[in-house]
Length: 333
Ligand code: NDP
Image 1 (spheres, rainbow, N blue to C red):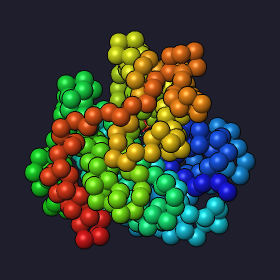
Image 2 (image 1 turned 30 degrees about the horizontal axis):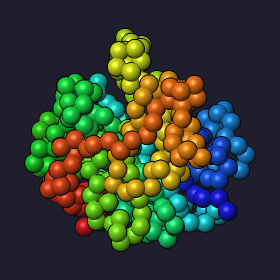
Image 3 (image 1 turned 180 degrees about the vertical axis):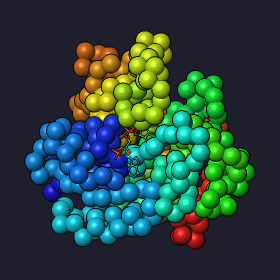
Image 4 (image 1 turned 90 degrees about the vertical axis):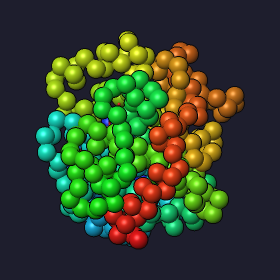
């Protein structure tokens, strides 16, 4: 019997290619959890997902009600039983917005969608994952949540959750630290929350449930829609810059294979880890079961490795406080 994987934001970019990579393997059935069902169905057809390898179920992460409805519909779905993997991938990046947008529940959009919607989803689906053997709960992180790297630390603004007074204050606040809205920072703050959530859930639930909690940074996928709100010159220069200057560039297809690897590969079964890939990532890295390593076609694919969390995302006290505040925000505490 096939395993069941849920991927949020599977209508474009990393989520789409990751879901496709899983669906093509044949041993996974994939649920595309998307806010726009028609768009997701159209894109899946265009991309050539194998027949009977996927279904689309609506999930608008900017609405707690929609997240709860998704969980209800997933459980009612008559596909493969059980849930083996949950991939929280969807995100919005709104650096050009002068004023905050808010989710249906009144949270600033980047924090609300990227972190809180996924936080509620993981909480609700934990009991389903717990029933499966070797289940995985994956939340996509980012280098921008890392203050010890070039992309995360030196590029202004820095992520900083401050005293969490904004998140604790609940609906209506503009930033996690209680300060006025700053779009690029709101995204970074939300990714820090994503990476902290993985570690906190690992500490609280891994031993009890056996679930593997993981985060990953697949490399800079500068072609995706995430950068659609950046100015044109940035969109056209950025992929080139990443490819030739920093060497951190990765194609959407290869990034998708990396995401899929964190779902299926025994190499990534350790819990609490932030996975990254080294090497020059211009070709697709393939897992070679005989050697147990990842080999790039032509020898230049990246190899998976356990990355270090930056000190800011590894701060256990802030993580615990952030976790409690998120439970409250989602109406779970
Ligand atoms: P894209 O913009 O291409 O894809 C984002 C996906 O999220 C889309 O499917 C989008 O749906 C969905 N989405 C947006 N808002 C909502 C919502 N309110 N409810 C449900 N789904 C929503 O971005 P990427 O593929 O680049 O990003 C995917 C992940 O990778 C993110 O977590 C991002 O932080 C991370 N990442 C990306 C990097 C990069 O270089 N691009 C680098 C590091 C991390 P729709 O199609 O309807 O818009």
